[in-house]
Length: 311
Image (cartoon, rainbow, N blue to C red):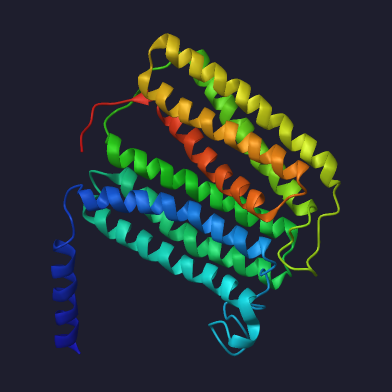
């Protein structure tokens, strides 16, 4: 046993010392993969709901009482729900690879270590929440929490990408205080828009299964309420773009311009889906754009601070 223990330690030591000791191109690729995968899983989760496949696997963590995988008799709904669960495995693999790529950098790049660890722990936690949605027969509030946690993971993944490219040097605010305040307000209204959107979705027809409960709120009223913080966010974004242009904050202008484009698309899709009776494709687009919008808003906020590169 002692010899085996020594062998294991030596193997672990060799593996550890083969890990990257500096930032590599692969590290940046993994950071981008983390962000893209976090957004894509919202898309597959939306497909589960919009196709009525929320209970395609009627239990959790197994797909059925006797099988971890979908069975032929579960049909296309089982395939869709099981496929969404499989994507979680891909997310975990990406998170593990990212964590290993920064493990030896945990002293000099504690920011990357902490972010990769938070993402890695957040994924199984999100999976548990997904399991609870199944066990509670797709309770709309639990489903909503599932989406909110996804947006939080998108924020973390965006910060991870940013810090991989922008180093860990001492940062200072390059924007005036009033512009920072406007940006914080815009972030707050993005959050409010997401939360009201969750309630709006929970009152609508896309429950994920024909027998799933709704939150019994007025969907028509909520659609109007949902638009109010969205339009306020648009106005604040226009103010950020104009300010960045005047102040010649090129990095902020770039990301704020991208945010403005995403908001415009999101508003168009939101109005169209409301007037066309919530067609599945538009609803799915609205969900994906919400995550892209959250990521873009995070980038705008991060662009308010600058630093010399160290890595």
